[in-house]
Length: 354
Image 1: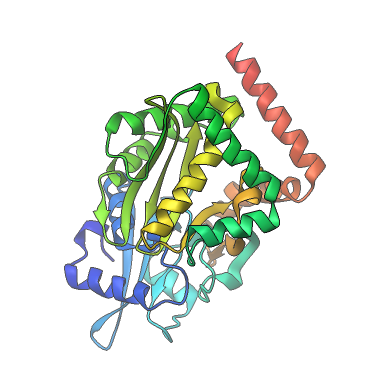
Image 2: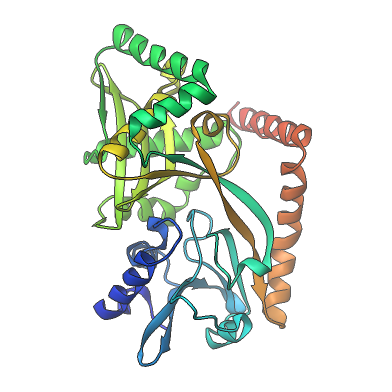
């Protein structure tokens, strides 16, 4: 059992080799660099290293809470979670928790094909993806076939933005710190406007994003993409990229330019730049949204749930998390209730601002 920063380069190398040989997309959230950065802002972060035949054969990055309540590394913000195991290695799940001194292990974006934990999932969710493996032109052809009005309208708005505001410029990998601060301000305002908890009001999340913005590893690079018009930013996105996957994470735009749909324009330019850089997939994450429906070419399953072993810690976890999770799940699967809940959140947000 190690803190992330205690992993040796040999262990990190084994971790990367296991990810390189996996059949699932190489999501940067599953790389050792992401776990390392979480460990710098979350002191309870740990990595269980499984050895077989004298060499590292598996890794379980996690965070350990009171009474051994475990959670996936970065739970709440990480969009891809699970263990990194050598093919064929299948430890007993509850024995593994006992060895880690964990009473439970919670996840909310468990990667597909995680045979160790999927049987313990309570819900399956959908993550929406954009396939640009065959290039951006091929992606545009898909959009023209499945939603021609959307593509035509978005491109027309991009041209109008250029005419009415000023030259449109896109930067895929912006290194200007002020642009990241602007994005975080937009996103915080969006959270408050929609009545949701402001993630950037949590110090550890702000520090995590700031550190990841400086991370430049081949399979985990912090990437800030910005759409400019007339020399000023109008939309931005911060995410992580590997050589083959761009994990979309925090998109936002200036509401003053909403009529131009700058967020949609930004995503199209991100897809174009990703394809040009050899990236084959943009993972927009779980959670239904109109813009995702317009942009997606496919879907991937992700899972939410908890594996436990008998004890007080597991009971406390159930009492603290399960009733709320079930209530949220009940509302999500009923469109009228979900719509009412969204309107209620926005109304509460307006009352707080007044």
